[in-house]
Image (cartoon, rainbow, N blue to C red; front, side, top):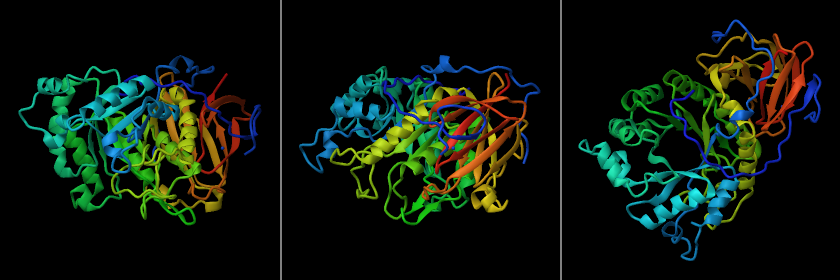
Length: 476
């Protein structure tokens, strides 16, 4: 279990979910269109696990960067805009988002908007990471005490919607000492709140990282100097365009680095999802892309995801048909909003199950169409697991990545992702896994769980682009 568990109040909604099709085994309601071994216990639990008691207590963090913006921000487009309303916050909650990462609602310059955001978020069932210049590392003074922070935040630090502070986004190494110093004071003042710092990804320039010593140095220096209580990183793998989609090859190795460190230090991990396109940098995601990015993060045990962005930023980011957020600057709700909502509720359908498991490692399987050759993405992994006691064999038409998990009762879980460029939506993947010592499996696909009978321990299905299953083999 992670060091810090904070309950998230979430709005109740209904999601329509579908199941991964099986091509062997016996089930109903399915469609026909889904270097060292880990430390394993000597015995396998008998019987069916039940995670229903955790449905209301283990809720995954689903965040949105830039909640409904305040008037002082939107006035640069139109002074009549009024988006900081309960209706707009409820709309955010209806999309399955339970955490807002504030950008424009700053306490010092616009206190009325700051407090209004907290009140509206509470009514909608959303928690906020607030922006307060009094609680920013760049403004930290060595003489500041925990009592000073409590005094400066006294007007809101007991507000029900206050989750923590949006402290720093993408710092260079020169900021780490200040971040670390303030974090030590912060955790004394707010032991149950989030001091939220988000790191650069590995493809960032040396200038952005603030070092010529490489990403491993940047990352480890952050761990050493800050001693974080959480890890948040943005790695946006979608490049190119809809006509020529490109998938960065470093996503797996980056997530491996993060997952191994959060396991080592027992801290939670939150992954930013590239929900909007950027000109010449990130392609606008389809629902296949969204599923792929979310599944990739969850496959490495992420405790939550953040959509970048929920509302279109009002700075230099270009808004166009191929570069826009879930909600446009003028308040227009896009198709992307509904795609993100669909994927969010697929996550919410089984988040309590996944959060009952701990990540153990990553396995990969080169697809038959790859003729056994490892892809560049697979080759960059440093510590892939070669085998697992519960898996006799895996075959897949295309490349398959498998996150390995175990719960407190000893049940194994396997997060199997169709690891191919989701920009090509026709790249389906027929997979067959043969489990050892199992006659049934609980299969979660797009949030919906079902129990299947296994024939000789074997389960097969076809995964669409970006799709994954979470499988729990069981022995009756």
